[in-house]
Structure formats: C-alpha cells, structure tokens
Length: 293
Image (cartoon, rainbow, N blue to C red):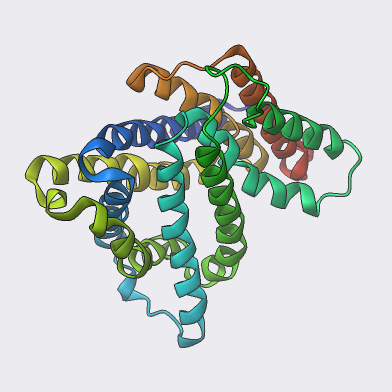
C-alpha cells in the first residue's frame, strides 16, 4: 500500500475510533445529568442543542426539501427522537455498555435478514448467544441480573434504530448529509419536548445544565457525525463497519471509567459475542472489489 494510502487509512481509522469515544463520553456525561433533569430532560437538551449545532453547521435550508419527502422526513425525525429517548431511559436502568450492546441488534438484524450466506449463521449465533447472556433470567444471582425495564427499553431502541435505517435510506438518498440535520430538527420540535419538559421543568434552563447539555450534544451527535463522514470518505465500507463493531465494548469501558459501572464476566462475554457478530457481519457483507482491483 502506498504511503499516502496508508496515511489516509490511518486518518480514517483514528476518526472512526474518535467518533465512538466521543459518542460514549457524551453518553457518560448524560447519565451524570439524569439526577438533575431526568433521562427525558437530558434527551431534550441533547436533541435540541444538537439540532441547533447541526443546522448552523450544515445550513440545510440552502437546499429545499422536496414536498414529496416531507412525510418521510417527519417519520425519520420522529423515530430519531424516540430512539434517543428510549436509549437514555435504558441508560437509567442498566449499564451503558449493555444498553448499547442490545441497541446494536437493530442494525445487525437488518444486515443478517438480508443475507443468505451460510457463514452468517455463525454471526447470528454469536449475536443470539450474547443477547441470551444479557437477559434478566430469574435464576441469576441478584448482582448479576439486569433490570428488565432497562433491557426492554434498549430492545425498543434497537427496533427504532432498525426503523431509522430503513426510513433513512429514502431520505438520505435525496438529502444526503443534510438528512441528519433535518431529522434532528424534526425530533427536537415534534417528539422530544413533551417527553422531556414534563420531567426537567425549569431546571433545564439553569446555566450549568445548559452548558452540560451543549457538551453532551456536541460529544454525542455533532462531533461523531463530522468524524464519521470524514472516515467514510477514507475507508472501505467493510473496514468502517468493523471499526464500528467495537461500539459496545467502548461503551462498557466508558461506563466503567466515568460511572464505575462494573460488569460481570458473563456480561463481558456477551459484549464480546455481540462485537464478534458485528465485526464478522461487516467483514463479509461488503464485496471487496477495491481490494481485488
């Protein structure tokens, strides 16, 4: 590989990993804000402030949205808002790493459902095994069992993520990189306020809360979005996907460092199985034409 190509690849890898670290730092800081304004209030701050940052950065109004796309964009934004709300609610009941491990089952299910190759049953078995280890079985010791509410909320977020991808294909095909900015704006206006204001109330407007909310919005949405766009331009799709597969592990490490969330050996094994399923699916899902050329 030429030196320039190696440099480009290295930048893409670093940008992808930095995006994941940034997003999970944002999640860790968000969980620290829950005692003040609740998970709903934190969701409101993140989505609303992220929408303002993305709109200021992308300025999507310069390219009008076709009228035929309005309904699809509304659905896309609504799912985005509900997904953020559900995963933050899950964070309030179970460790971040486990919640993210369950949430990524949404996009993984879409990829596996579209595949017909026998080897994908290996990744399906890894994902199913990891998910089984995370279920709140009654036979587990109290310190090992997860709160069923958190598991259900993360599973609902996974379903929303799958729907978000399916709805987003049409929107992104027409709006490109502006789709996320518009979607976040729709989420901030339509979905999140009634879910967040009732919990956060006047505390949402305290200067230190707004400051922390802005930091969460940048770390969780704006910065990862920009880094991932840059990474996708430099990396083959399968490499980018494999790097993203580390998300549950990075989330678990972030929860341990920032919040003192300690997982059992069985839960770490579950995350390892889910990461393996994600990495294997990404490695074999995309034809490597550029490498064969």
